[in-house]
Image (cartoon, rainbow, N blue to C red; front, side):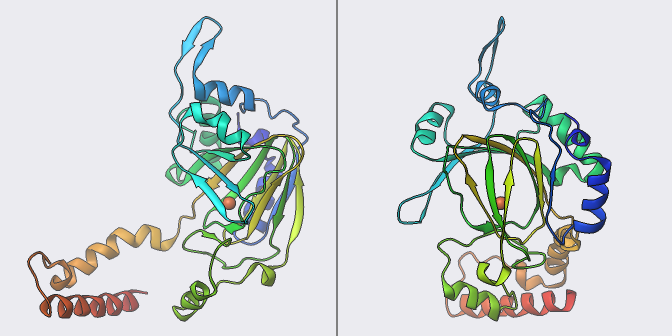
Length: 291
Ligand SMILES: [Fe+2]
């Protein structure tokens, strides 16, 4: 599966020159079966392993999580579930998230290879899958990465913001269950996050073959309509200045300030407390002078 079967060159031009980092982009290619990407039946058979024609194929290694919004609107999540738990969670209304499959499934590997030609930096690209039962609702959140949603089967309604909560967030944020004080503390630290009501919203329906690009920092929440839905997400981590400089910055800090590297073992109060306070002061000063 080549990414150019999903995004035309014109789509890619538009996304990379006009929408990248800025605004969402929705396109319908009418590639109704997205040939080459596993259907839900094929995906489950790959994940479970078993006979394919005359060969017993082993199950592919993939990390699987299950999540749903329960009656009290809180998020229920289970991590690292096993293939034999999938049916049970799915039947209870959980959406199943299959972690990066770009090394495990050849068709997805070729999608990633072709995506890398467009977006560069293979280490910053992952392809995940989401299988959700009818009427499942996801969690309101934003990601720090770019997302390209590829609807394979079923129909999904996405409610997405019209503008970002944060232009280039340093981390993902699950809004559901967040407290007011968290946003106040972040704001005091200079990191202002808009609430969903300040960002506006629009609804986008993704049918099989449809694609949605969403920049970092945009709130989004999915709702599966009345058939099971399978979509793949091409997630592209930003290649930022800080990402590149992170390890250098860490080494610079340790090289320039011996105190930061001092062994804390056997140090007792008040020396320990004084030392930690000094380290915090050095750290803050160094960070500010490097930013
Ligand atoms: Fe997301």
